[in-house]
Image 1 (cartoon, rainbow over the protein chains, first blue to last red):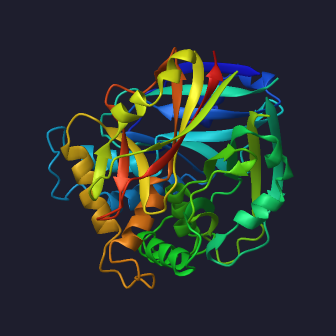
Image 2: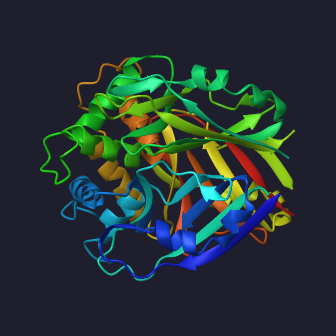
Length: 140
Length: 140
Length: 140
């Protein structure tokens, strides 16, 4: 059994939904050691999330973000407003998209579908650099 | 430690939310070998998802689908429209319901609650046959 | 490899989103045995869910709940109504927040971010005591 766990720090992203598959793969040379396993991604923040969606047309994450802004609007009469008008919509996006992903690993590679990529859901206008915990485990 | 991973192909389903627990179980005779473990399900598509909900009254998945059609409407002014009016709502459903599930395994069985079943969220009108990766691991 | 799995029963909570991190930790003395691992939480119900969000200002879970009541309203023309007007909104919350969580474990502790806590999403007015399956696995 192989286990490894590491914390990585993403660059700062603007408000929106951004592809991060390439950066994650560059941080995970250990993937090549796993024949059958799982990769778990966990974001250590409550105003950002993680999701998997289409990695080809950049309008897909843009549209996902535009609809999420209508579902989790800034002009709702929130009580939690001290951290800014973008904060509660960001908390909502974090819970609804989710703060973690688990992805199968096969023969040293992430077993993603042809069109699937991994995205950061950045809910804040100035969210800063986001920290992720990557946990990889499986059979060597 | 026991690990197994396989790709399965579901039959084509119509747009909506459909029970797939029985088919998944029929594809997993290896469950009986696991005393304590986890089953991970992952759909290799960005216009369909997976969810767990009530397995008894078929009106529950129907109502889930009807509300998701109001949350992820076809008449939103999407930019990504080339693949049809059902495509962006399907991408939204995939991210919001989620593309994977992890379910506990106990004494050779899925440890689902009395009313819980596993459902495919088919977001397209003609989505075709959907491919899933099943990863089962645990103690023998 | 260390594996343990147990069922725990939460106290009854009112409709809303409630912090449960402390109770979960008190049920998991085995955490101290895991140096690198994962904790999986699974709720055995279809009218409640689990989520991670801000653990400091109690207005955050209140606002999450208030928005989820607008997204999953009681006055939608549901077909599944026999179990009460709060039942379908509860099924929706269960699928959209999700019924399980996976959290990294490092050096005997849950690797949560500074502001992150674990919450029960109670979708019913009288949901009763909710049962969870905790599955902890990793390297000793």
